[in-house]
Image (cartoon, rainbow, N blue to C red):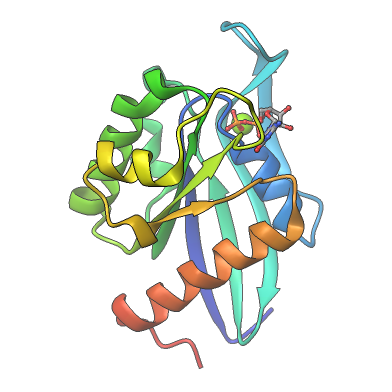
Length: 176
Ligand SMILES: Nc1nc2c(ncn2[C@@H]2O[C@H](COP(=O)(O)OP(=O)(O)O)[C@@H](O)[C@H]2O)c(=O)[nH]1
Ligand SMILES: [Mg+2]
């Protein structure tokens, strides 16, 4: 393991791609706690956390994915304790998720108080919002909303690289 390690949270509503992102990025077999889903669209859903780890340049990154369903909101504090940055995933094809995404963003900004980026997923879908529209809805800087297909390791690594950069610059964290 690297001398400097960062804990990064991966948040987002149900089905946004959190488990997929952790699995794409992790260089160790990712750990997930999946249970049969009570909502439609997926057979299983994450009830406690996803965990993955990768060496990333000069830092080691511990990735902690959180449950998406709002009824697990209390778990966020526990899973994200000590996180130094967050990636918040938002499905571009499901605008009805945006109020929940805003809640998660507000939680990260005002409770965790750590640097974050938003990753717009499912941009390959025909009916979708563009990243600029998502940024506008969330009153977020446009450069904080990235295009991110969590199944694609290049896109996943680019998003993580930008977040790690923010954490090292803005988060006052020593990364070297
Ligand atoms: N087409 C498409 N599918 C995606 C994308 N991101 C995630 N998925 C799929 O969406 C499903 C839900 O993803 P999952 O990682 O379980 O979401 P979670 O609930 O946030 O953990 C999986 O089948 C993923 O492969 C994307 O950008 N495009
Ligand atoms: Mg999941």
